[in-house]
Length: 549
Image 1 (spheres, one colour):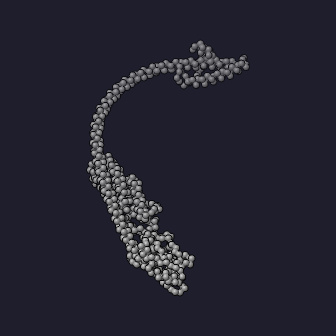
Image 2 (cartoon, helix red, strand yellow; image 1 turned 90 degrees about the horizontal axis):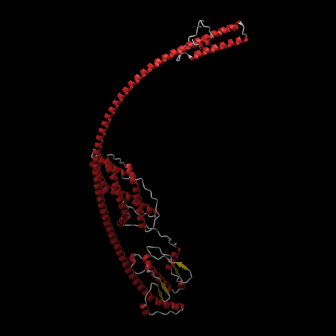
Image 3 (tube, one colour; image 1 turned 90 degrees about the vertical axis):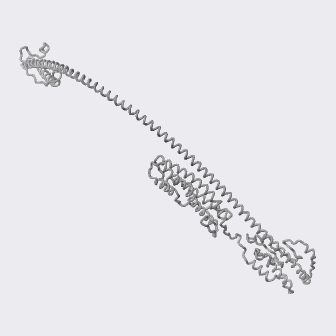
């Protein structure tokens, strides 16, 4: 034991070592917590003994305490020495273990390094082999891709050339079709113009002939009236003498030679006794066509009152060239008969003219608005009118729908070429429906215009209501799809394209024209009938083709 430890133990040399508790072994020599706790207990015990010794230093207990403290010091010294020995032993053991572990770790690390280097070499060699194989594969894929791209480019170039030839051929056919349609339309227009001119010339010639016949008849009628007036003048001379005897007035007779050479106008005066107003030629011509205003004639007896003269009547055809108007001649004969009477009542009008005047006075005036007659157009005129109004609309929309069908054909051919034909009736109907509705509305407008030309005046336009037409998109898609599916294999692109083009060509040349003309005629007839009903025409019979009889 070192001097320091011997001093701390408080034990005399040669004394037996006290019994120390067994501390658990630990790193660095002792279990620190257990030793510290033990030392703390010893220090507390020593403090308590020192306090007691300070109170009574000479008492036996104080000496016992001193002895106890000495023993305690020795125990502490032994304890510290044992701890130091244990710590030295543990340190030596730890150094030996550390040296041994360091050697083992160094050996293990060197072994692992050698193994890692070997594995890295193996991995490097394997990676090199894999990279070499991948480079070779990429080179092969590059060569194959280049060949595929070159082949595909050649196919695309060939398809583009075929498509350009097809487009050129379609353009040529379309140009020929347009040229043919233009030629046909020009020929139709020329023929229609020639026919219309012939009809107008024939109608004008017929009207000229009718006017000439009417003029001749009126001239004959005028000559007859002049002859009758001359007879009336010759017969009125003795009546004038008789009137002089009755009234005492002086009447000068006219010179017959002068009267024969005098020009007779439509309004004649006979010696101031009787005034004859014949019907005007223009009134005779237009009396049957339009109502005439009522005329007032003075009473020949001079009673100061005015009566409404009956409306002039048109001469029937069977009386032209006869004995003249019976009403005027009969009135003169009645007047002369009344003048021959010797009674004072000679100044009263005769019964027949009075009855006619009373009857004309009691008869209500004719209506200011004439009865509207229904137009009657012959089959030829109605057909010509239909061609003039509906045919331009039908031809214009026929050309439009042919272009639309050409667009649909291009879509179908493109779908067949790429192998993905997505073409259904709903999409086609959606693209064609707006143009179809325009055709229906313009056909109806053509019928309205034809009705206005028939009645010869403007008609208020009724509301246009199109029926829900089914259209022809479903039939077109059905025909094309059935024809293409009948070929069989999807890979047979050229055969499927040829069959689809044939169906579209049939539709453009025949089927489309039939559908459009049927729809146009239907709505032309509807617009014509509704417009005529709006105009108040009830006697017109509209035929299936829009003709009016």
